Structure formats: C-alpha cells, structure tokens
Image 1 (cartoon, rainbow, N blue to C red):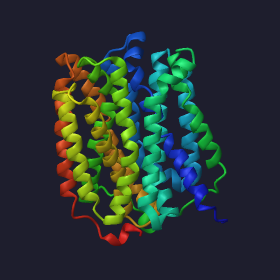
Image 2: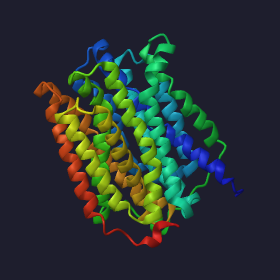
Image 3: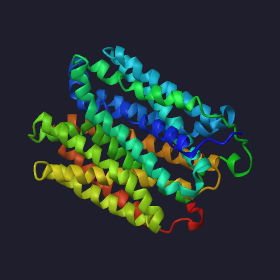
Image 4: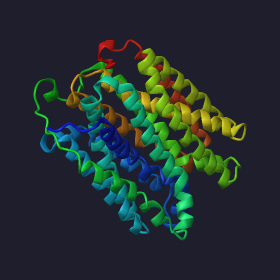
Length: 390
C-alpha cells in the first residue's frame, strides 16, 4: 500500500478531531434561549448535551468491530459524514424532537470515531505519540472553543436564527470528510491481542475509565450550565458568555502542552493530579465566590479540565501495543466514561430546578474534582515506560 506523507495523515487527524465537539459546545451560549423558545425545562434541554455523551459511551465498544469489518479509515469517514448530517438537521431544530434527534446522531458518530482515532495515532505515529496526541487534543479543544466562542457571532451574521447558527458547524465536518475519503483504507485482521475483547477484567482499565468519566462529566456539566451559573450569580449575560469562552480557549494551550510534557518527562500522573487540584479549587470558587476574580478561575478551570482530558487520551496508548488493541482500551474508557458523564448535565439541571440555585449542584461538581485527583494518585504506578513510543 502506498505510503502517505506524515503531514497529510496529521492534517486528516486534526480535521477529524476538530469536529468532535462543536456540535455540543455550540449549544451552550444558546441553551437558555432555546429552552425558552421551545418551552423546555432545564432538565429536558440538557438532553441535547446528555444524549450525545450517552451515545458516545454506549456505542464506543462497537468501534473496533466496525474497523475490522469496514476498515479504520473508511469507518472514520463514515462518522464524519454522520456528524455533518446531524448538524445539517439542526436547520429544522425548531421542532424539539429534531433537535434532540440530531444530538443522538451526533453522539453515535463521535462514539465510533473517538476510539478509532486513537488507533490511527498508534498505527501511523507510534514513535511520537505524545506530540501527536497533543495536536489531537488541541484540535478537539479548538473545535470545542470554536463552538462556544463563534456561534453567537455567526448567529448575528445569519440573521439571528439560532437553527442556522447550530447548523453552520456542518461545514468543517464536510471539509474533513473530503480529506478522509482520499485516504487509503486498511482492514485490520482480528487476530492475537487485537482480537481480544475490551479489557473489562483489568483493574487499571477501570481506574482510567473512572478518571475519564469524572473529567468528562465536569466538562459537559460546565459546557451546559457554566454560563447560567455566572448569570445567576449576578454577572451580565455578555460577561458570563465571555467567561465560558475564556475557559474553553484555555483548553487550547493545556491540550497541546501537557501531553508533550508527559512524554518528555514521564510524569503524566503528577500532571494529572495537578490538573485535578486546579479544577477542584476553581470549581470551589465558582461555587462559593463566583464574582471574586471570575476571569482568573475561568482561566484555571479551562486549563485544568483541558489538561485532564488531553492526558487521559494518552493513557490507553501506553497500555497496549497494536492499533486495534489501543482502540479497545480507548473504547472501554469512552464507554464507561461517557455513559456516566452523560448524567452530570441532566442531574445538574435537575438539582438546579429542585434547589432553586446552582450552588448545590456545583458543590457536588467540586467534590467530583477532588475524587478525580485521588484517582490520578492511585494510577501513579503506571505501565512500563517501554510503551511510551519515544
């Protein structure tokens, strides 16, 4: 099979990764408006975030099977086509059933693409996984931040129609799809380690999955309710949106820098503990003193959660040797992680409806950040460094 330039492979990875978050984060600046216009409760509107995350968890184990049947590259292209289709459906999202249905399709596509992109990294970039995962997680952060920051400006350009503001994010997915259709497809035989099931009996796999579940749950809870929390505390809607945008943007440097540092100094678990503590302190301030230095804590929570996410993506790469085996470790991590993480936006919204304020649910989020730090400490005796891949 003809070898492709590394630059083209990296560009394909970057373009695919950019499309894994905007369909979710683009809803955050508009969620109160959509809930009002469609007469939906907070717990019901939170399904637009929770259902994609649930699908990302439940369907992740099917990703390696599809790769064996269809080929890794072609399966990822199919996922990008589904992402584009789901986002284009949002032109009709004035009907709540279509809005929620598009969220389900989006989650299904992301569920399958995530584990396979990790296998793609293992296949083509085994010698420089740390730096490539840095580009991968940075690209996801760019997509997530773009959805949060650019949706409102796009809305003004599109005549203040929020359905078009959500649907416009199909364009980068279509661009990525064109490139992935140009990549040669490789069907990998299901033999040896690659043919084994998900690592359900491995205690480290459970630790990694639990860590991923908490950091993902915190991210999606904040992606759904951070703006509303700041606004409830007395900040203007514009200031609240800007704080959320800042936190998303701060995921960019941490997403790129921390995987590189983890590979360079072999200290990924120390960095994971640091990100957990930073997230816990920031959430405590957002919970109890949201108007005290809010810009500082928006920066810190963005850096902490962005770093936690990018470092968690590295972990399966150090646990398995083949691309398909890495996809299986990643599939379990995403399955358990997202299946649990989908609950946090819904439970946060429900707790807000019951308690009358966001302080109580945000106290629980702060406690979860402390648990995440403890899990990082428990994982510190990691696998042999020989898997680091240079």
